[in-house]
Amino acid sequence: MKNHIIFPKRTNVQLAVPSGPRAISILIWERGAGETQALGSSACAAACAGVRLGLVKSPVRVKAPGGTLDITVDPQYNITMKRPVTEVARGEISQAFIDGLR
Image (cartoon, rainbow, N blue to C red; front, side):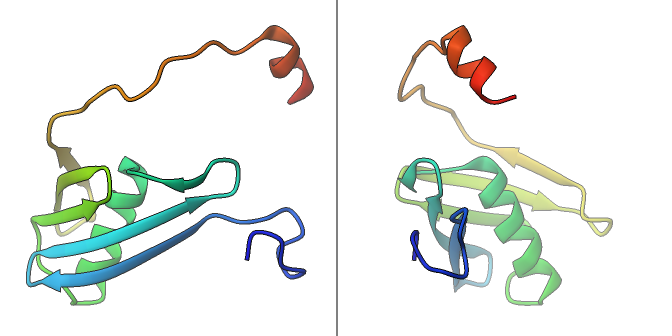
């Protein structure tokens, strides 16, 4: 799919499956990184979508290959994300790379 003709610039894909009344399991593919172990914004989006569609109730435990996040979705769809974080990588971005983004 990362090279499919309908996505000439590639795409991000998230698969989310309810796994209980307050739980969702997710898998994430990012066009620039490939399979991603965990992503807070994806967990929040999955929780909000699940609550909105009536598939789960808040608070939602979102399980990804890299860990689990607890997402609270209030009636106005404001979200709160909780769980410990772990640094998995550290790096530096060159000025040439930044200039190339413009």
